[in-house]
Length: 197
Length: 310
Image 1 (cartoon, rainbow over the protein chains, first blue to last red):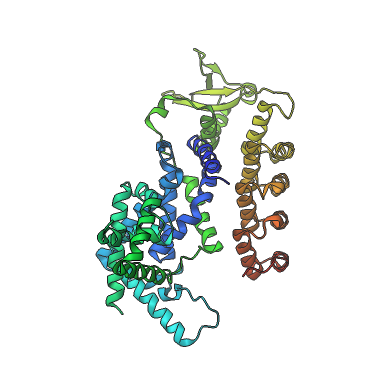
Image 2: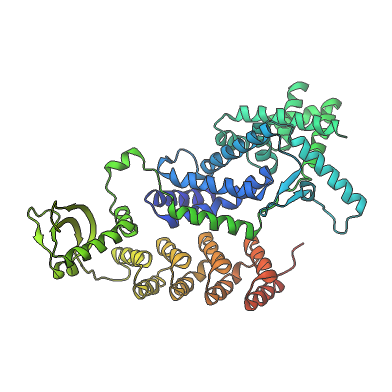
């Protein structure tokens, strides 16, 4: 489906949702919720927090759908809500200094973020597995050196593959500012990874 | 273009964020500047290193549980109205509000109680209240109660209400007004599953209309009667390939419907799109752990008949 077609469908769905049509809003949710949950989960590394952000974001969108003026796409709008919620959480965590390489699953159990590090080959050797886990720990620690905003820009550019212009729109800033934030974040990450070698 | 500029923009080059002319100039500069070529290599290595942290797609069950929780919360959530909406009358929204209002049920009870006591009613617009008779209440469909007043020192209650007068409409299935009535009946006739089944049955002859598909999708997702859901599925099954919303609704029915017949129908309807990632993931999950042996076996069979993916 082309972008223009999808945007047109979104417009119809939003108008229906603004008239109080639940089903139309649920269709909108289904179009974007996979991406929303993936972003929230990769950023928070906690199934519980990711689910809370998902829930809060779509509830906010539902409550405020009548204020949506079609000045940006629904995609940008919902991402703006999600990134604000994620930024709030990252800031709270930074104050509590909780962010670490440990993730929390939906049942409250913890697992090591290193397990999320890709292993490209099957039957990896124990040495390679160890190296993989060490690299994962280094990346996770390096990411904690970024400010929440730098982390968000890096996440959306590097891991979610969004264009800097879109990132600027989502964060209510200019493409130039998003570019500078990405540069600062990248420099910090490279320095942190170099220091940990 | 100098070395400072190149070193600041080398990551944008790798992310394909530079304009064509800047990209070309940067490539030219790299060919003749060893320091900047080294910076490019270092940035490439850094990005490859960061790629070691994979972004996992949320599992089907994780997504399903998030959706379920949201759906519950949405049932009690209310929309904030924009200020100008206060001055606009929307009859469909008003009807929905009236239908869902628990207060209406309470008021209907009051009406029954009141009529038993010989209370007085008045129709909106009429100046003098007229005595209630069982006949008027039965004939009138109550659209909304506007006020209730208990007269002091008496058993009398005055209730002002609006009536919806029964009416009928006739026309061809292709008539937009008839189609609108049918989609309304498919969504809103809560107490009469026979009417819903009839309307969904008629709508299945027009699935090429997106509004009809939307009404059928709604029936598949939310109708309480499995017969209506099966009928809606039947009308939608040819559209799983071309309409992503239909595909999502059928996939949801496969994963979450309480009726095994609907789930089996959904599994069959998804055959043309079984290679789709979301469908494949759902089939893998079902083949592994679904409580129904039939669904497990059929999902397994679907997966086995798919070409292997490297």
